[in-house]
Image 1 (cartoon, rainbow, N blue to C red):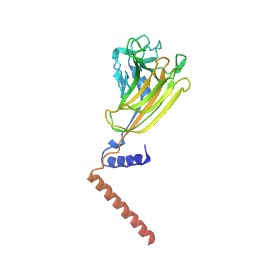
Image 2: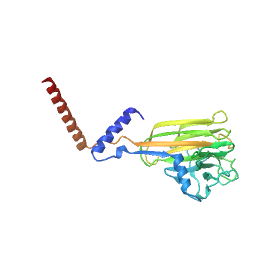
Image 3: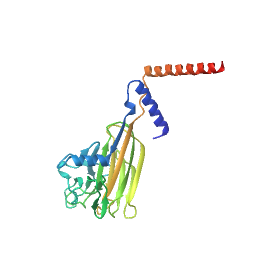
Image 4: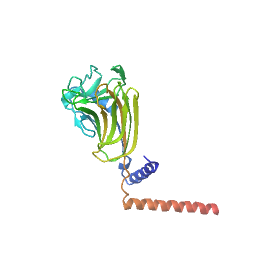
Length: 259
């Protein structure tokens, strides 16, 4: 967010505050990892694949989305009781999106899943996970219009090749390929204008083959209210009168110094 926009927002916030409104000062922080962890820690069994502003799903096409069914929730992904979330019911348990709910690291495929780290794995949403491999999708839906930043990190948790995306309403904002040579990639996106109902998708694509595509994710989304409309004439009048008063005071002080 540019310094001009930040300063403009602060001025607008001050104006509306004096006018009896603090709507311009609103800000929203969505930490996908902590919110997913808290959700799983407080719930168990079949449940809707959604928490806070996030929804868990998969897609055959980039930008598409199908939410997991409640019955596809798992409290024991890949034999790890601390990895909880959703996975498709087939012999490979993918596509899948789960989170490490413990305060300790979990060993998975000889790799380490950190506490609160989200784990995503693409795969076919059918009895054959190798047929029509689906993307794993964590979707954020905005409920407040504003200017947002999206920051985080992808981490390869095994040696396969996969492509990770950040999308806005299905359009790519950022992408990176992780494999045995590139083990992690960060993203730091700002000045993203979102209206109510707009989406940000975190997507893991199989890059042609679903094997060894386990991917870690950390993501934080922060939004602030967009610059509000021009204040009402009455408010502007008050500020105008205040400015005139300050100018007169300054003039009197200068006159006294001269005297």
